[in-house]
Length: 495
Picture (cartoon, rainbow, N blue to C red):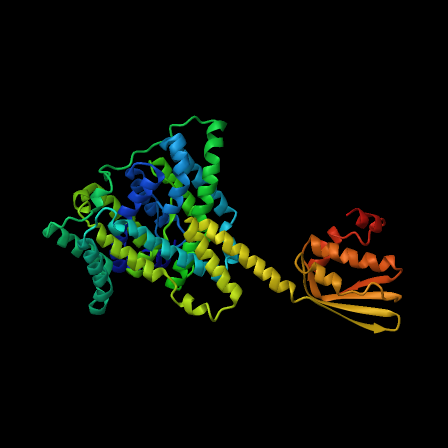
């Protein structure tokens, strides 16, 4: 790597990256513990995974400044595997997940992101913002465990620091100041509030190298493969969506195929060191960017600081009040939500708004980001196909005994019926010319429609000539059409 590229990727924003990495590391601890609990494993598994993935992805990822670690979306997919087969099978599944992601990156899976529309992206971001906010509600409890007014006061105080401090100075990230100030207040005043140490035991040693203790046979593969496929797909989907968001926040570009390969490598490393599978985290990535992180150094700092906090300062980390971290995550949810999308509901086309709202509703209802994006992409495709299918137009003019039909538009499965309906098969003419120089045939259905039109005219004794077919259309028509075959009428009747 040339020195200029090395400096740009790592050392062009030293102060901002170091401070942002510290903020992210502090915020990673409670989330990694919470996701471990969701998956049904020891908190150490999520924490080991988080700093392994963060450190590795800093070097091999395709999106500088993005944070990857253990995530809730991945943890939800592990519950049944851990419950039925235990931790060792989870580690094996994590290794296989990494291998599958690396393979998908090699075959350029990142290129499919161009099929995700802006409305799906907006819905994804809004849904994630809502989920981030909802994830903070258990810490507020709303009376379940008798949370005192002190907790609410600390959250309010933390938010005040986060939003007011930047008006005075931006020398230090306000979320970091929030965490430090709230911790000092809680310790000095000996406040009875929930702290990070209450979530579970923090590791105090480096993660050991662990090859999964499972039988290396087809039976093991049959157990872990379905889980690994799901983890690989969800992990890449969330990671690639997050790269898009960070690209927009920083007005830069990223290598999404390299990111896919990097996620695979990071998960392999995590699995070998006792960690669960992870992926990019939009919440932490937004914290990083909002705190000034831009290069790979911020991601590396987050992973290294997380490790140092656990090994050297775990007694202090345990004292951080959860209210301070809740305030940071509420800031993230507010900053992540696309507030302009409310106004755009009355401005954007109804189909665009429907896609956005459907994506939000599906993700919030199922807590499944992949399912929500899938619904959004499917609706976008259906609406696009419907719109394109309405553009097709067939006009004609008569010149003596010859009727010339001119076809304009895209002929495919959704417009094939309209294409066929544009011809008059009862008109007695000697010859029909079909001019398709302004049309394109896309699939088997469109070729089948052309076959029916040509053969219906020939069945009535009318000569048919097709003009102006472009090279791409001619290729698929030559391959699939039957109207020029000797037994064309018989074959059409069979179908």
